[in-house]
Length: 130
Image (cartoon, rainbow, N blue to C red; front, side, top):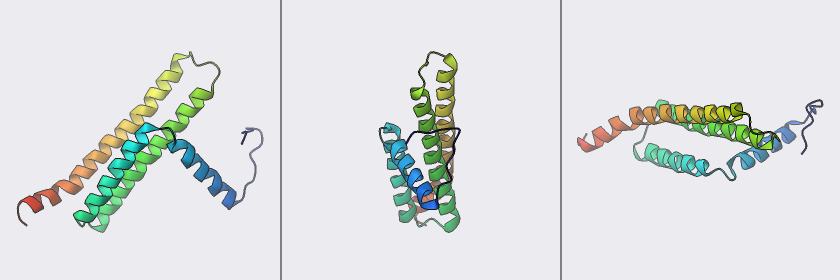
């Protein structure tokens, strides 16, 4: 689909969802970092079931997972935009990509901290025999 910024079509909800699913596929495909995020997502979900985390802990974990994946998707979109530009020698483009990567790093570090806050008490309880 060719995007015409002067004409934003009035699409139906099914078309909007189709666009979103296509975007998800495009954002994930070819991005090695998504494999890392999916691995850790699976590990967190398995750990959540193993440790029987409560509803609030699940909410925190899910928000972190969604935050990391969303930020990675936005960073991927930024990379696609930069790759589409005919003139890529402007140093601000590299800086914009660095900022996008930093956003992923920040939300990932925050998510690790939340994961530690959720899982360490469960691990301590398990190893203390409680």
